[in-house]
Amino acid sequence: MDIEDFWTGVISAGIIAVVLFVVLSLVTGPLFTGIHIKSGEGQYVGYVTAVEKSGVWFQGWEVYLKTDLASSNEDHACIDRNNPELIEKLKQAQVDKKNMTLEYESMMMYGLGECPGSSWMIKNVRE
Image (cartoon, rainbow, N blue to C red):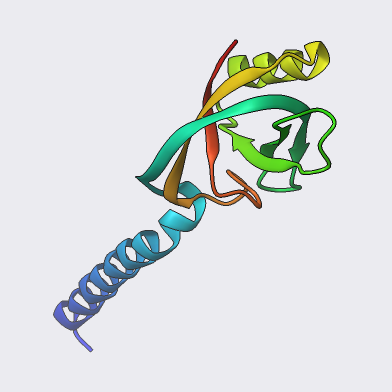
């Protein structure tokens, strides 16, 4: 084996490694970050009954909602984990037991832990 064959092998291995990295990033990237193509939006009028953090490695925030406090039906949504101001507003709404209008949207695919067990994410709260 001469030096030229050695460098050809090194370059080939490097190209294969880069291609493999790009392919794996494209395949696994959406699992962590999600595919943020909006698939719906709307409003929910009701009461916040609970706000809780969930998950071990991929933590997210979940919100439980009712249209009427006496109702046994409870809906479920999530909050953007990178929006602490909204999380605090919803926690306060739970304490105050005020009727609120929640604006939400749904995405094609959420990232791991971003929206556990829910198909829609709260984006804004209005009193």
